[in-house]
Structure formats: C-alpha cells, structure tokens
Image (cartoon, rainbow, N blue to C red; front, side, top):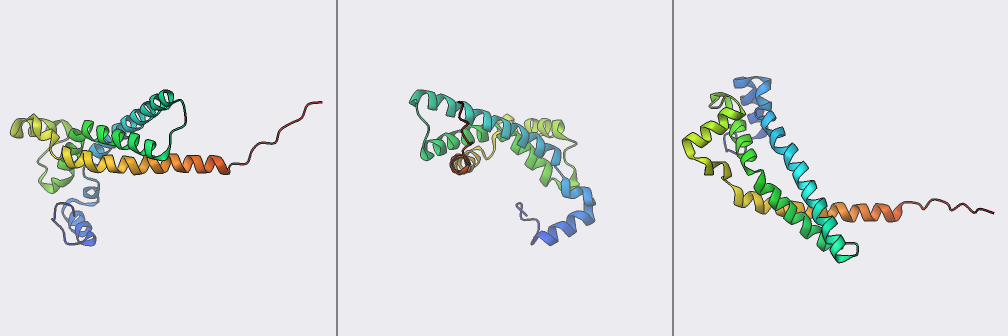
Length: 162
C-alpha cells in the first residue's frame, strides 16, 4: 500500500497471496525483526541513561516536558542509528515476487554496490523527525501514566510494634 502498488488493503492481500502465496504476506519479516529489536533496545537504553543522568544532575524528579524532550532526543538518535536497518527492511518488503535480493546480506551488498554506501541512509531526515516526535509522545505519556498509577496504588498498611 505504501508504494502505491495496490488500491486497497483487500486488493493487496488478494494479489500478494495469488502471486507469492500466504508467505508473501510476511515478506521482510526477518528484516523487520532485525530493525525493530535493536531499535527498541537502543531507544530504551538511551532514554533511561539520559533520564538517570538528568535526574541526578537536577537532583529532583523530572517533569512531563523534560521526559518528553529526553524521549524525543532518544527517538531521534535511535532513528538515525537504525536507518540502514530500515532501508534494508523496506527494500526486502517491497521487492515482491521479483526477488531482487536473496536475503539481508545480499540486499546490503547490492545496495552498496549499485547505489553506494550513502543509500543505506536514504530517508534519514524524515525518519529522525517522525521518530523524535513519536518518542516525545511515547515517553511523555509513559512517564505520566507510571506516575498516575503509582499515585493510585494503595499504600501498604503500617504495622505497629509494641
């Protein structure tokens, strides 16, 4: 749908299954995991380390805008770091039945050979922008939700010792 090859989702499913079989619906799934697992690990690590450092420097709990800003920076940085993985994932997913690439490593080799190493960074600007915005929203809401849930948690009863 993103590449404009199909007019609707049902049309996409029908054509993909008819040309490639049911497995065609999962084209690029391995490269999707290759991108998303490192992305999530890197983003959460960057976010938590920045948050810990900022909290220690400020010597107080962080407010919602501060958490959102740290989240935006973490998302943007992680988006930039993982752009090559996103390019590979996208190329593998949209190749369809043409099977231009024989797998992840062949995809990287072909891109670098035919387009140069900089092709692995295609789309880095928009990716950094939208993931930065997404990180701001996600981590801002996450920390607000954690705080609200902690405030609503019943306090354990205190035990008196005689």
